[in-house]
Image (cartoon, rainbow, N blue to C red; front, side):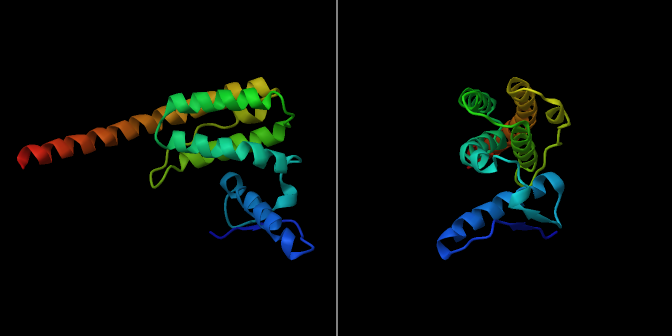
Length: 168
């Protein structure tokens, strides 16, 4: 389906990049709410600009680690993220949105999808500690499923290469 992201109004050409960035951030909501919709930057959580500035770096690292089943890197990234965020103020909705976004994207790993876990626990968290406890558990579950699949495929490739070189 087709979706659209709408950024903030800009008064000059020099503000256009901010509006484009906002429209892309709004468009990411389709991972949570489905496609065939129009998403507005103004509907993002209150501290979305801060969230996207600080959390975007973690999202990229987590998605790369989750895509290959690198559970140790996932755990280290979440711990680093938690330690940094304890000094900042993040509202519950921003953390929930971030968690849903990362976990949903992680389940759409390339052409193969991973069964999406029950993410309702993110709705029930009350503190930043609860968020990281639930988020870590959900990430580890995805990581283990992807990792076993990744290692299985890797093993098949290694076996095929050995067979090829033994024949030649």
